[in-house]
Length: 74
Image (cartoon, rainbow, N blue to C red; front, side, top):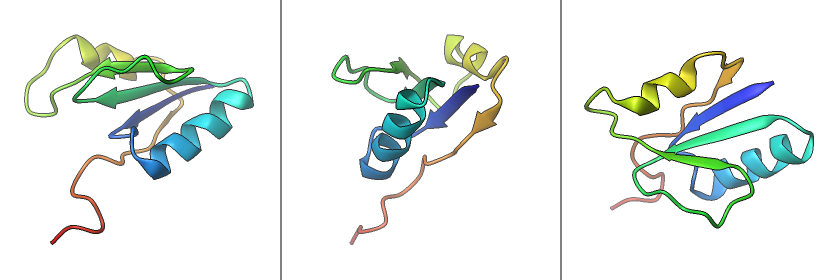
């Protein structure tokens, strides 16, 4: 299964991605900053402008949107 997680580099996204990846699923995180510290793909995105990142949704079985404001913000 292909799982796309916009905004998934935080604590919740990392926990979800780790579990899905360990179960053998393809995980793609959409993030403002690309990182190679994860075992799954992290693709740079800009939620304001369309770009190559939009192709990551093709063939996706699940999208878990974690993009937005953090929970513990002033």
